[in-house]
Amino acid sequence: MASTEAPASKAAAAPPPPPPRRGGSALGDLVLRFLLFASCVVGVVVMVTSKQTELIPIPIPPFLLSRSAKYNHSPAFIYYVAALSVAGLYSLITTLVSFFALLKPNCYPKPVFVIFDVLFLGILASATGAAGAVAYIGLKGNSNVQWRKVCDIYDGFCKHIGSSVAVSLFGSIVLSLLIIISVRALAKRIPK
Image 1 (cartoon, helix red, strand yellow):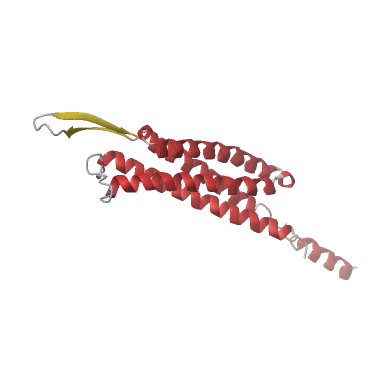
Image 2: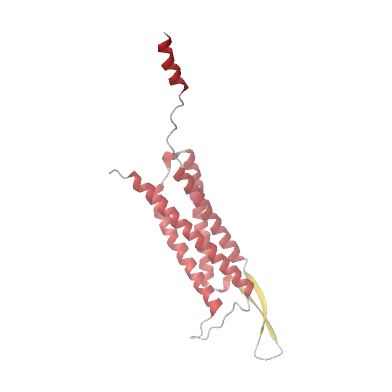
């Protein structure tokens, strides 16, 4: 009788095997989508608050003219704000869906997200490139067409623009990582 009870007590004392890990990809997806949302919001806020007024000398020596620099003076910056706003709204919606996917892992529409992630990466990258190009011309000028530098006059404005473009570039990298993670997760589902 003692020999039959010993294996039962040893089996009862052994801990059950750990459950299979799930949700690591979904948690990473949620964090990256939140980072994308934060970068879009910060990029828009920094760009929209970039306004600076300076006194500019005019050809008549004793006079100075007050001129302001705002983001809405450039169509590229307007496109940038619009693109980041739409990408921010998209990332907010997908962040909420990713959060609910942690609660119910079987109802996650990953193939749809991959398609829209690629679409919004193109929009975000083009807006970042357009704003970056205008910012570069403002920083360096273009001597071939006689465009003067403006960042030596509007230094605060240019710092806002540069910071906003850098944050948007970070958002583009985050969106690229999201696409890689989603494609890898979809590739694991393909039967071999």
